[in-house]
Image 1 (cartoon, rainbow, N blue to C red):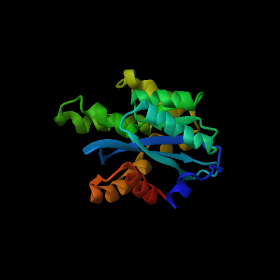
Image 2: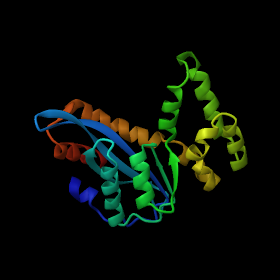
Image 3: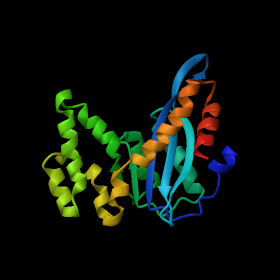
Image 4: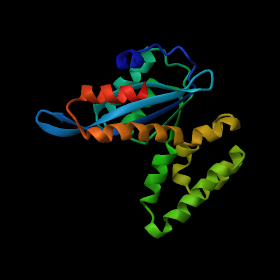
Length: 211
């Protein structure tokens, strides 16, 4: 069932918006416990519905793993990608640029906020988070960029790619909440296992949750 789901043709395209994320899992390999990444790709299809497009398990943080993974949904029909949203891992960014040539890239808001708050004193974190959220309350591309420029000049291009798309789509593109909810559901199942006996078992369980 899992292999049929993960290997199915992607015939609901074009898929203009794509999200990528990875969840670290522990597996036993060669008598050791190692970290691997369960990488998941979701997208919005031609009917405006979110769809899980693929999943695989590979070496944690490995750019080659991401490249091989992204080529799989492409071969199954993933097309029409205009915007890819992900973490700023350099290996992942390089893979996106190779596989989705011509598409815009946007840094995941959740990961960006997490990284940003680690750079300010703990007592200041609530105020900084509130200031950053005001960026996403603006109603035009010009207002969004003006608000962001005052606080986040260095990260501007990375987090505001959504402003090039229809305003009616913004709320779905700047938020990573659906993906975070999906990750939470996956974690709810994998945390019970703790350490998987091998990568195949990880793929089987995570794939079953996604299916």
